[in-house]
Image (cartoon, rainbow, N blue to C red; front, side, top):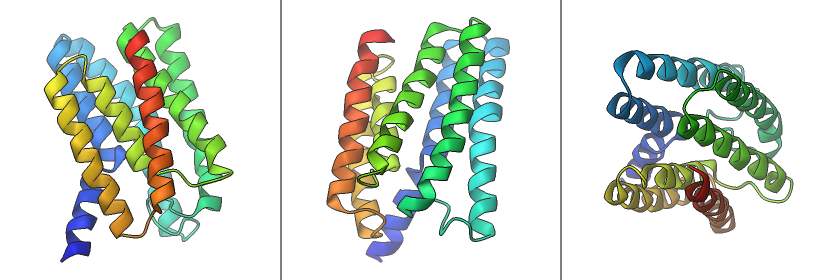
Length: 190
């Protein structure tokens, strides 16, 4: 039963689910419909669709052990692709002069992945934890209470990842510290 609950939490807390859902809600809450539709299309089409497709196909053909790319050595190729996708999207957002908050949010996500890739040479930090901690800090300026609740939810994600043996305590802490550092930094610029 414990493993089943952990599995549900892990899926609900997967960054490929939490970040696009938050993005769509935030964009359609704070922007005009046409603008929100454009920005949602950019985020979903340029970032989440390619990443999801690659992870699905690679896990299906057994190049990745699982959809989470839990194997440390397999993560390096995933990072290269993810960084390329985020870099191209960041450039598109800045060159087309999209809203500063959106452009900087994607830029900070890129910085988080660069940091995580470097750290991955030493330890496989939890991207579930780091990206959701960053997301919490991106939510806080809009709604402090929801941002703090999301941090609490991220602790349940950390528990789930430990329970499923996808990460060790050190890897969870590494992910938390990366997310915390980039998240706090984002507050000064966004």
